[in-house]
Image 1: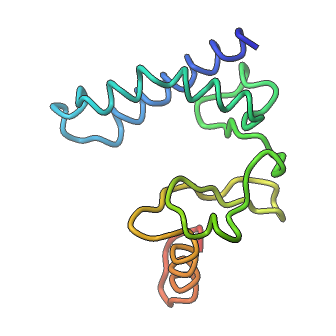
Image 2 (image 1 turned 180 degrees about the vertical axis):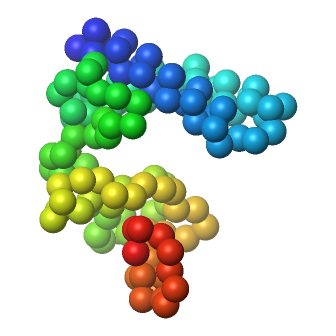
Length: 132
């Protein structure tokens, strides 16, 4: 389990470094304290990901773009009742294609409201996102 955690931590550190270079246009922000904190604490996140079965069994041979998340939906909590009023990170799973298709975060209101917003955007004409 330790070797898997070490390998996954290195992989996520590499992905975070690429994300910073590609998505943060201002080089002065590449060393922002929150990014340093995230990089330093990835090993803690990886430990929980492995303990809760959130990662695929074999991640060492996956490339930079491959999904690392387990396809076993039973390893993730569904936001249905009281959880729907909470805030945090989320994933959407496409059961038809057996793939995670969207991830994000909810702040300022609960998951239930956020899902309603997604539904409205999906019905809007002219939507260009492949998620909708």
